[in-house]
Amino acid sequence: MATSVGLGMPNIPLAMVPGHPGAQSQAEVRANVVRVTAAQVIANLTEQPDVMVFEDEPAAHDIVFSGTFEEVNDYFYEREWSDGLPIVPPTVEKIEAFLSFTDRDPDEILGVVLPASRAVTIWAVAVNGVMSGCRPEYMPILIALAEAMVDPNYGVEHSGNTPGAETLIILNGPIIKELKFNYEQGVLRDGFKPNTAVGRFWRLALRNMCGFLIHKTDKGCFGNTFRVVLAENEDALAGMGWPSNAEDMGFKTGDNTVSISRMTSGNVIVSVTGSTPEEIMPYLADAVASCTRWEIIFTVGGITYGTLRPALVLTPILADIIAKAGWSKDDVKQYLYDHARMTARRVETYTENWADFPIVSLAHQVNLGKLPTDFAISGDPERMVPIVFDKQDFMVLVSGDPLRTNAYTFAQNGYLGFPTAKKIVLPADWTARIGKR
Image 1 (cartoon, rainbow, N blue to C red):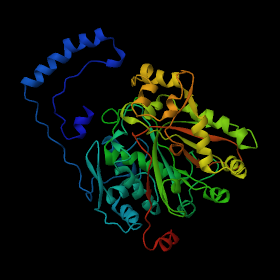
Image 2: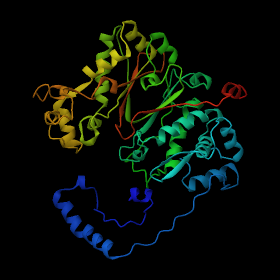
Image 3: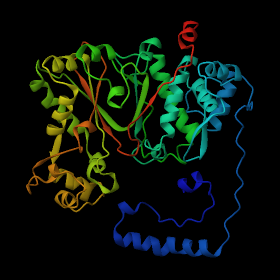
Image 4: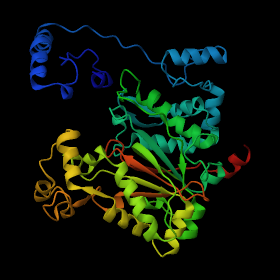
């Protein structure tokens, strides 16, 4: 039903099966279909659906309301334009301040996004930037995020699906320091305006530009709140000679970039003890594998083969220990590929019994050419198999408290929010403009 609304067909005839088929026996499903669904099918075939009249949406430059701060917030909340937190009223003056930090045409369309089939414009980006509490100079970052949002490789249309996963935004480049993003202690916690407000922008953009509304088109079973921006510690990376995430994504050293990836969950890896990679890495690999559970279906299940992209965030002190031993970032990824594994029995149990994505067996998928041979090196059900197709499928980031030996790992949502990166394009007189702020 949510899909039909998003495609502009809110009155399309539908026949419903009561309850959730996955929680019913075959007899219960059959009884529900016979008693309820069949009658609806007949009615849909013999009755004309009601004519639906769409309410006109405000034009880009319309003044939709005037009032006090509290009145504006109430008005926006009642119309589901806010996330329940106070928003900054998007006055024309404030929107134009954001537009002064880009050379792009305000009416430029970046793309059209589901479920609302709305055009994402530079103007709309500025409006949601104002509302989320961003500063005008964040505008180039917000535009890059919008460009990533409309990229088909990311798959923003899946943002309202059942797992309720949330997007992680990764920032790279000199803009981190220029705009004072936090990339050290407490990096994933709110409290720094740039990290927090840009993270909130993403959630408001999903609501207002894409049209994801809870109880309507956003069907996350539980859901999560937005994640603050994770800025990498590029000083630490340069000192170790490791590439940044931006370089891993194909950009040049020094490029300002944003990367987005939809993460289903995350977990801290506390007190990583050791002075060598050989002492540190087993703990990290175990944690990465343990955080991945049903998400393994994005590696071995259905049409999703090989789309899982787990992430490991190392604090600078941990990354430095590993780098001083002569390990490259590729070496870390290779170790994770070789050791962040689970038993074949566990994978097959997830896909065949628990997560309801039957694949017959890993060996069968290898024989069909759909999985690498590493997944069937023997017939032992206790053999350890990878959680990804290739070592480069792991995202390895460096950020967080430089004085703590902790790490963090994220399980990822596969092609339902695939890692996507965009370059941040600054206006011609960027240095002069931020110097005035």
